[in-house]
Length: 200
Image 1: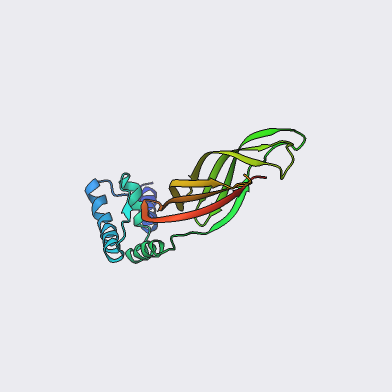
Image 2 (image 1 turned 90 degrees about the vertical axis):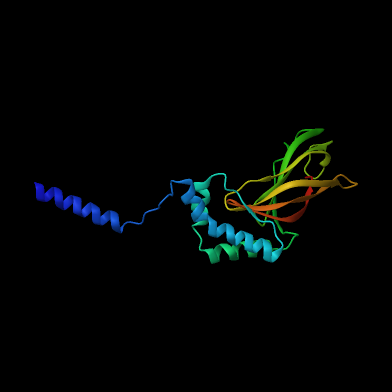
């Protein structure tokens, strides 16, 4: 019985040694020490490119896991590639909430329209009006709000926006101003998306 217990203990020890293990540094100083080379890369890129990239270190364990999932070279390349991206960014597609039942007459609705962009999505919430409720007859009455969608990975965070309603009230053009955020990295180079939304 003793041999069997020893054999099981030896087998578990070998299995433990051969298994991949994610080590979480438990001490704050250990975490900061592990993160320091990445902070030096951020400082180097900021100096070389006159950038102001920052890291959110409010959750040191998450920051440690995020940063150490990349080599220093991969991390530096990521910072440079994202910093050098064009300021005016691409819009990919638009999704609109359903307006209304076409059998209704004289309709005012609160709608939200979403545009999917390079990284993430932006939206417009507005009031639209139709005297008949028929598709194609809606016009914008007013803009309620604009915003962005937080997504996993890299996304565009809109910090401000401005808009204009066309003279026929059939479209609203919104210029979103903000930055890219990815994990704990905030790319403070300002980016812009200009999106035109259309009433149905």
